[in-house]
Image (tube, rainbow over all chains, first blue to last red; front, side):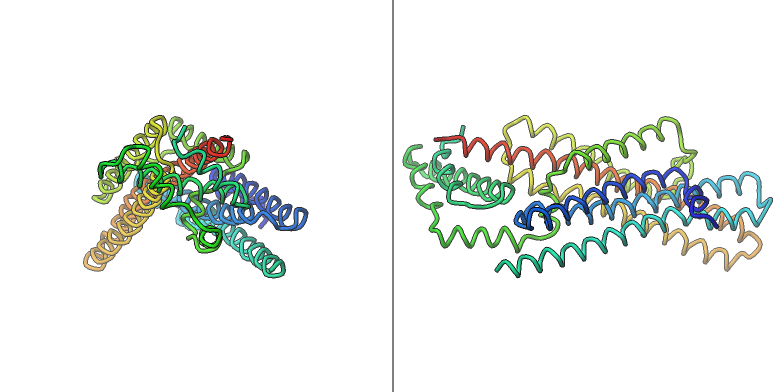
Length: 130
Length: 243
């Protein structure tokens, strides 16, 4: 299945994921700039960026789970009102409801990986400076 | 202008540190000075004597300042540091867009009607939301009243706590409702399907409200943390402007 199709199944919350991913990308670039171009001297700013990665990663997970909860709620509203007319549609809808939660967790995983690697580079730079 | 500006200016000059760390240390020293000053005045000293005694108590050797810098650079907890984050423009812009999105969704309507599918767990979540709203309004009002930056920063853990509490109640509530329903389904096979559909409907509604309250707590925290950081910068700038 095409990645765009999967993205669209996640609903409107997926656009917030894109926004958060862009913010995270900006934070990673800012950290890289401070680490490699400015020599990693401004520890406070680098720490600030690293903390930002975790903050926005956590935010993405909450938005993702919220998207799933709203999706399931809508599905069950229809099921209760009309009955299980098409069971296959229910299974597909249930699978699609997972997309935004998975996306939120993937954004957190990406942010966490960047946090770990950049923090490691930052600490190694500080040790070398000592 | 603080009566201790000259003292703080001299101390600031001895701190060869990034601006954010220097701000933090100066704000904390200023707060300690004010506390000591009030204590000595209450003991019967004149204001001049109390100010001199407070400065004498707080004046630090180079070694003590170096230790203070070490503590503030390395040993601070993650939550304390993230509270002190100074958000760049694009982060504030993104947060504004997210808030705008949810407000628009609320106005247009998402099809979510949580109050039409109440579980008992909606009420503690609403209490948490009211506490969050009250806290946010009170804190915003305090900014216009020459507040102590340290006290404001200390209180920033509250929205974090309320957001976490909302998540705990939401997920625990969904789990408990699901457990009860599964037990009922085991006892009543014939009505298992509608029972299950109803519990999913109720639990997702409650969980959605809990997650929205947690998001609101995150936004409140983000706004207040930015305000506190800017206030600390202003206070520090005032200290350092004195010659």
